[in-house]
Image (cartoon, rainbow, N blue to C red; front, side):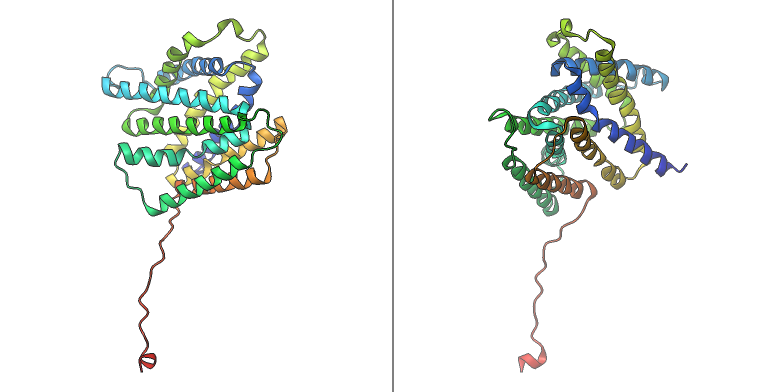
Length: 304
């Protein structure tokens, strides 16, 4: 099997796994804080075993600076999970995931601010298009949505989640060269310490089914997903990685439709297509050129 094909399979599997997490969050019946705590706990155990197998636990791999940045990225990624999972019950998995895919545009602003990256006309075009899609989604609130501010709150939570994901991505850029599985282990371990004081242990599942959902989120959606994702990134060119990443929102929309019966309205579909199209343009580097004004020289005949 070629490296590209192998990487494509890994990336596809990682995105399909990511697209199903909303179902597990809602079916767990747990508070969002508790869900993320148990995800971090079981994810940490899985990643600890993976890092040990890969020989990543030996001393000297991290210094104080890289460890501090990894912890900061961990705080951001845990806040990202908390906000995104909270958004599901307000605006549905479909809308929350679609709005969450504005993260490339959050990264655009943060990259310019912290990394000095240049903002081009093309990037501004895709940003404006994504904003237009966002406005359409906000205006396309379904009539049956419970609570006057619930739908808007879901969108706000999703946007906030995207912002913290972008912060974690900036931290990852500063950690270039550090083993990604070790970064992931530090992130989920940070989450355990962050959320332990706020976790209601008395509300833990009382049956095997409830625990199986939480274990799956830790082992599959965290440990296995990270292994597949990082394995794919190492094998695939950037444009293909970006293209395959859109399997995630499509899978999430499908899960929301078939598991919970949520059907997007016309305006919501239009807004989602615009946002995902703009994100694709940003991720895949589609260029928009400014129209060039050519000097129209009079022909010899016209001049006469």
